[in-house]
Image (cartoon, rainbow, N blue to C red; front, side, top):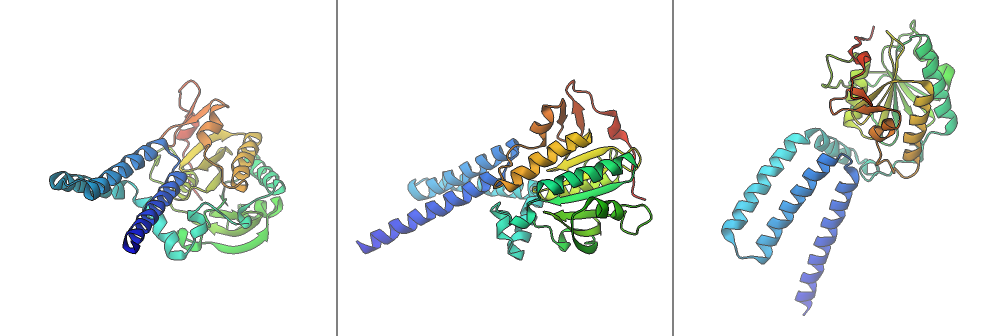
Length: 302
């Protein structure tokens, strides 16, 4: 009697842990195609478990196991960046990032958002190149960058941001990292994206690269050549945008980050109402389906 009760308890715990892991995985996946792949993979795993436990079908069991192994290898290749990020988070003990529960230090107030928009607008008018990384819960660390830059750790202000991107300062070539209401570091060198190499300059490739790896950070980019404002999120970029549009996007994205990470709507849905949409390759098109000619701009960091 006790043995049967123990077996039932183990089975119940097994199902509960598997269910919790599945809920965690589905809550962290936002792209529909990735969600379909994950559903299919979990279905195969469930089928393999059912056949092994309840059906005496050795040949079918071997075939299903081989299929699960092949799918596991395929997903490991497709999601190598995500799996690497997961292992990094587990190795550094950043469990809050995995469970989507960032601390208050990542929440920016309305004053910071307004000052950031004002600084970006003034940089755009003066055609001073800039790259601003806003950490909304990814808990970016120095090891996440090619070069961590120079520590600043100062309260955010328009004047400080303008000074950091002045052309005669040694830190203007890199990115500025912002967490919540503080500027953490400047002169940060970001990993570059491999998409759109022929279309974008170094700043835009850096913005795409960091937002591809970390889903809870966004990048504001100011083109040094044309003064164009851009916003990158989840490996996609919207450009060109006005200062008022930038303010609306920042309020939407950062507001959702502050409200328990209810960020299931992405930049695609935000831009559709304005007649701008993203493509899978990071290109930008208008409501008629014609690509924005400004994406052929050639920009590089000086």
